[in-house]
Image 1: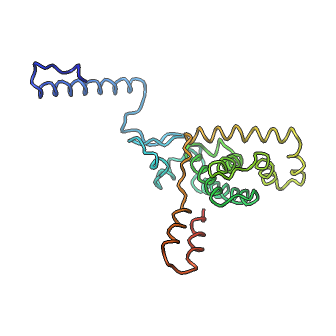
Image 2: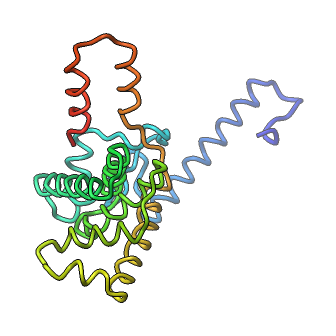
Length: 236
């Protein structure tokens, strides 16, 4: 900025010249963007797989979405999956995670973390291009590490496979075959990289459990309310 200024000229004139040059440069950049087919800043609303904000998001705000963004700007919506179908898919992977987490003897905090990881993933990626059962299995494996309650990859792969193929009586035997297990394990390992890349390695997830416990310790309330509050925050 200093090269625009001349000590021999009045300061207000120097500032006016500087601003004029900055405006000209900005206009030139916009012309170049238009020539390349890029949208103008005012046209940026939603993209196919990434939600674009007009202002850079803060680390906390970027995972908060309005009803309109969820209902209209979802990547799945761009691939022809309607709101009702996507809501059903969300409920499906949450139910799957709850059962899988219980079978793996994981704390509720880790299960809720897995659900949040899946929610974040599918606000950046489409259900039409990603199998929700695979992503959910990846989510529970990663959530265990995030919440410092990790489970062995072998256990996660085995239990998840038996759940996914619960209709097949031979599933417990098949997943213990080396070639089947290795294939499923590699699928989860690759999926973990995809999930991490999709959420930009942002593992800072704020869950309501600690604030709830802290509030219950400070407040003298009806003995039934803690259980009701706990059930309420688990109502995914």
